[in-house]
Image (cartoon, rainbow, N blue to C red; front, side, top):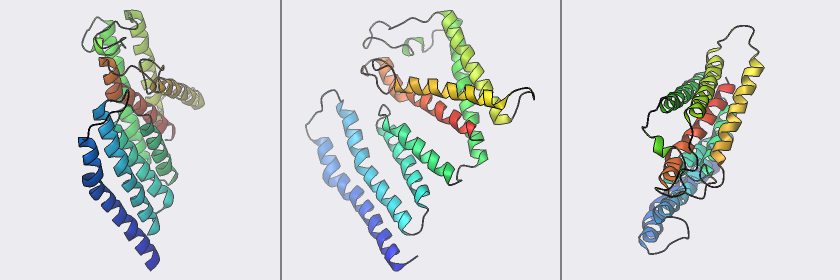
Length: 260
């Protein structure tokens, strides 16, 4: 570590601190308190995105400071990407950038051997639990349960008609697919299954499941996923806050299982 690298890191750290502290009081807050609007973008969301985007610049400069004093470049970039993903998820969960940041961060940490087998197995276990819980909910709905049922099917508008009405058979079929997917993940995480099982087949089926989850996260361009246009309905809000993030998290957890 040289004097020049220390000075470089110190300047980047100072810039990051000043940018966030002075920018918050002198730029971000005045803009948030001012009267302005963006077409088709709710003001509260615009405020959160403004604040998040401003402070993400500081995160990038801190990563540069870490690299300047000898930190592994890819590891520093990966951590900055993960932090950026979390910030965007918090301030604007319907924004498609956060999963890209998180995938980049996870890939970087894995390449640097910073994602140990234990962490991957814990992530796999949480994914299995989430998929199993979703399967249980679908079985409950197939049996006639009504809790949350009106919030899991897209509607044409807030309080409007549902775009489709899944029957008990279709709902039970989805539950069966989820149970099967949880079983495949369990086999891979726990190295289970009879010797006659062909591991490549199990892994290809998991990949197929990840592709389906990714397509669901991207959405249909209308009512679901990152590409949806109707965000003001109850389903649209729930999809941004919970459903799509859960789908993305499940896909990432399943991808992590394949790395074990």
